[in-house]
Image (cartoon, rainbow, N blue to C red; front, side):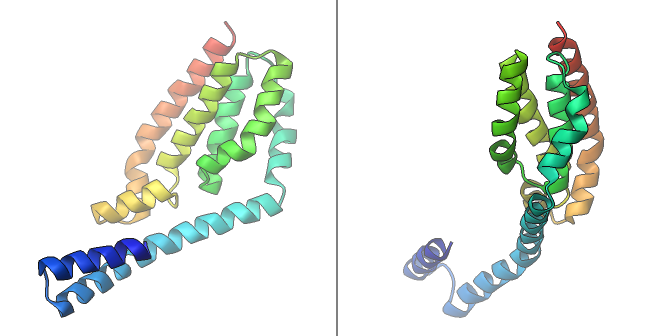
Length: 176
């Protein structure tokens, strides 16, 4: 970011698009506009670390273990990982945590592997759209000029409908 800012400042100066004072006033306004989104993202990463330290992964595995059958595994993976993606605001990190657990489990249960991977990807997409402190929501809200909570609340009905349809799909197709 610093290199990009420096290059941008040089280009503005060379092309004489703004005066010296206007250039730095604009850069400072940009920094001010990004303080809230960056603070929200940092809080999301802190929450993820706290969840990791509390042993959330082991708790989740123990909680959903009774529901694990080869046919139900894709639906259970989707619902569980969607909840975790929403709670932790970790969408790509979800794969790093879940893949080493879910894929060997799916393989040992002889579950439909592409369906299980699809459930993980779908859960990540759910969390990305539903979580009010996730990076995509925070940055979309900043671009739209509204609060992250307002943006997330406008997305929530659509995300919940899609999650219900996806859960039904994973139940039906997983048991075929």
